[in-house]
Image (cartoon, rainbow, N blue to C red; front, side, top):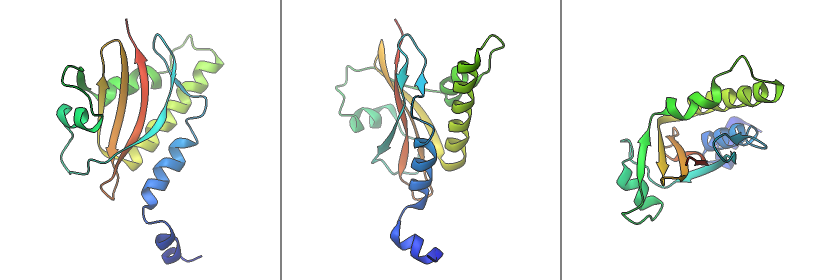
Length: 146
């Protein structure tokens, strides 16, 4: 198969690149909080070049105005899961290495990355970024903080 054939049979190779690379890291990977939750791939139809706003996230998720949504730094999303602690046992070290690999995939394939938390106690967390095609994709999870 030539490169041209590959392009025509797959109109968004970077989407496949992100989803294939990220999805291979997600099975059995849990984001730690009071309730360890799985991560999953997500897509967002908003394609403008500018960063997303809280209002746009509410519209995208069809949330009522009363639902609390905030943007947090990408570092705040990654820091608790990519920092190796000396007291970690083998399982935690393996989880941290997987999160570091996931962060690398996100960093290499997505630009204009943003993280949004939706809710106050049980929060949906979205890490979204733009691909070369302009499509927004990312990962989502749930975080519980009481």
